[in-house]
Image: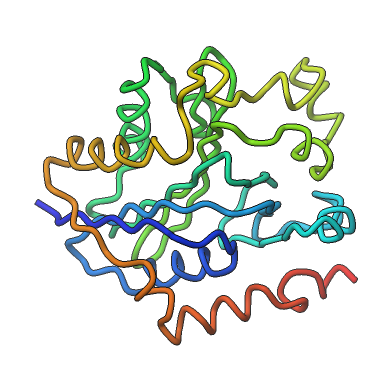
Length: 243
């Protein structure tokens, strides 16, 4: 049986959070499954090969104190703020199981009476509306990460993200807001803070073990983590090839 470990970020810096995730992927031990929980403040996260200027209003976002972050996986642009929580599962190929990992999220939400479904390309939905998109990378260790919309600022999300109207029309919907849901709409007492303990409990329950907590502050001060954070926050990494 693999050992379980949990890390909860204490920072809202998207570049530091992503750098810690990258370190976990690169240094994961073979017989360990990691669940990492983190939150970013006012950040548009784009796929690895996406043009930031096509995906969001870069000037408005930066002028208002926000961030653009390029993740190491594919997929579309999403908006993060402190009203949502993000999760990462890191495991080697033997222990990596997307459906099992998603079931951790689903089981935790059952604590609040929310019966959710896996839909489409590994999205999670509640009553037909998406609250969690997921992305993946595979290598020596595999990464599965995603977001849980709980009380995200929908007005800012709509202002910052560049919506593909053709895609909306193809799916027969009028706006992004009609396709997604903040789970606090269904359960007002649910927050990005009080979901953490249910997630940790469900992680142990689904995998049949007791998770060990790792210290985020110690890990975030690692030289490799700091160097990665500096690189992925640089203009060259984020914007240069589209200038």
